[in-house]
Length: 397
Image 1 (tube, helix red, strand yellow):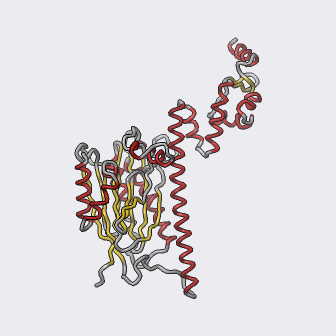
Image 2 (image 1 turned 60 degrees about the vertical axis):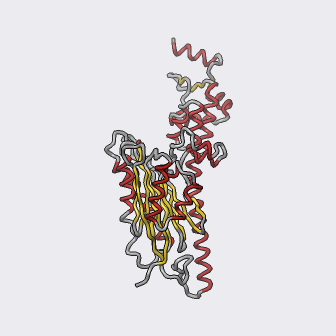
Image 3 (image 1 turned 30 degrees about the horizontal axis):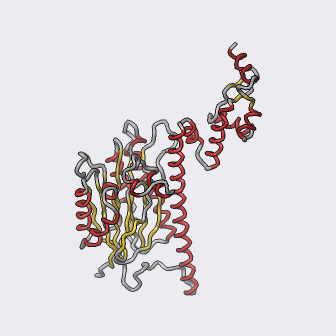
């Protein structure tokens, strides 16, 4: 009797056939059947005798939403989560997804532009020098001798927290900061940086090609991702623990940048301080699209929500949920000063106020002490990590 009642409902217009619903939703019957198979849009009724599908006309909006989400490239598993949410939560989820797409696209665009510039310059050099196979000289320091970095790093628990989940490292080949979060945050941040240390890229004899550097950066990023997953695997919720990572690997003529999350890298050149990384955060995406001002972002309730980070793997997941870090190459000049820091510094000290201690410090050791002191003067609500490196002309024996 229940099935008969539903069939009458369908016949009386309360439910409609798949053909009629296809016209209402402006989708094909084939697409609707596919959505049903994938569990994205179930019919209101499937006749148990003949298998006919019937839909509630109110499902048309949901059907169109599924189609729109597929058109922007959202993975099917994520679409399933979005359509189960209320309108407000779905909007937040879509914004977060698209911000991540834009961040990844921006990273690929930067890499493409670097390759265009690099190959164009190499082509011009080869045209000028018959038989040349390209130059590996130090950018911006012709005749000045080889370059090196002088660096220092410092972490601080802050004025509020009782444990420190930030990590920092400074060495002749590596500069890195990581901001851990979740149950295994301290282990994650330490593991991410430790995974970079073997990537000292050899003894430094001879400058590697751009292609070799990019391949090494990709391998380094993958190593850090694996190390974090292994470090937090024993946590109760591995996918709730992870870390940001911002690191620079020195090659003798270039810096390779590995970046994910909202830790930052800055460059001091010519007396001006420039941020050279892009925050992978929800509020940064809202600033970018004009829906949020920088002043509003400072007090936004979701300011700590990351769109990308190195995280553990859910036990039921078939693939890791960790995101791939951005990788990039940077040409350097003698006299450059680089600052890497966690949001324990950048979130409480305005960028305009960062410049003074970075400029005034006599060396990296003094710079990191001044910067940690600034964070503490601002209340020190979070752990803080920072690392500073100066690019200098290497002293010859």
